[in-house]
Length: 311
Image (cartoon, rainbow, N blue to C red):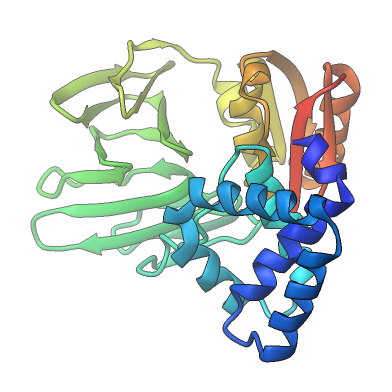
């Protein structure tokens, strides 16, 4: 990744690639490209590399086009540095789709918000979270699209209180509990009483006070003791990691800062991280991690930070 990022000819080839795929490309651009291509044999080789690179991620083209059109503030060069160099690192393109279009409650980066539902239940949403609410005469259903929420549920035996998240469901049994959905992993932590967690083909796992469980594409994991101070630290603008893999730490930090954090080297994703950070200073947290682990952070643009192994 660093070789391609530092190679000026490769950067020129990638810039030409982005420019020629632009809907506004004109004859002057095409003539300029042909002149650049004929200027040196190395240009043709770099162009072939750029084409091969894009072909690997052709499935992302529609989302890339959508993002490019919607982000007029970004120049072509910013798109090059923030998008194509990420491709050079093999990390792929982030699909800039929105999953919160139907959400009733949304928080921004770094925002926490508490509100009371129609039944008297209290919900606190963490940073960059989205939640929809659908109450009926027979049920109380919520959907957490992303982020984290703490639920203090009002008793109503006639209407079950169910929170959906990433294909699973958490049914409250008169309780206070936390649901965190980051990436493709959902973690449920119970502070009071009990919940039932269902996901995939697994139904009705009971999780009692002081315990937690996680589920994802691989199904539901085992129920384990929870450190409630750690799991609820976000409610005091703190985030606590105890031997958490770096890839999960980066995914968590993304919720507290503007922009993407791309792990360009998967081999460092399992490095354990133990630390306490102020969620209002996520950029400083990222820098602290870089200073204490054998990694480097390249701020490709204001939007994208690339994390790679230190040489």
